[in-house]
Length: 330
Image 1 (cartoon, rainbow, N blue to C red):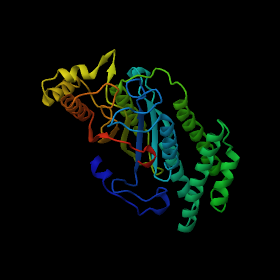
Image 2: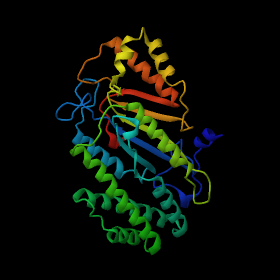
Image 3: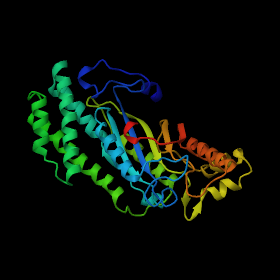
């Protein structure tokens, strides 16, 4: 029943439409959710932060930062909740944070339904929300903790021809500033030295799925219906898992063939219970592009291992090995 709901696009309720039109997989009670995970451990990057192999992304960490900022700018227009995390040493040290919270999207839905009474004003108000969000991000990029709620609020009031109530415009403005501040703070860590960086990729993915499941359970539409996510994990990593000092390639290289590598992944997950019950998509940028080359046979066994491991997490749409993905364009 759940997946049938996800695949129907209902766009008849004009006043609760997202800032952009429904996609083929969206419904009136669904929100897209992208989880962006960055593996910036030593095996994945060279001294200037660029991936080093033919199959790895050419983007430096500074370019990734700009791409992430572009991704965040378009999030409200695309009605997409954004999560972000670094791949750390262990499951316990991985923190998946909300950048654009699903509750902000639902709050915007609620305000549009309450305050906006015709199509022309609806479009103008949506444009004002996009402008206010861009302004909030711009202030935070220029200087941390500099977003002025009053300035953002005035954009919302003016853009909606004062149809948005003072209370609602203040609520939205406050949430936009908070989201902008948190987002830019996270991205600025790419210029510094994030703590506990490692390559427990599986831990980061499981933590992400746990976060999605927890957040989805609490989501309700303004009229009380259960919301569902359309989730996607965007993983920038060579997929050279290192956990508890062990490298995944030591096991996959020793596997007899691809079938044995797949069984290894499935055996490891034999006692695993999925926390997120819906289907998930994953895009992985930079497969097997570490400083140490992996021969073709071992690469294929490693690829098969991950294909099977993702399957144990109900990740059914899998793109491994994409090269040069622009995070801002996804």
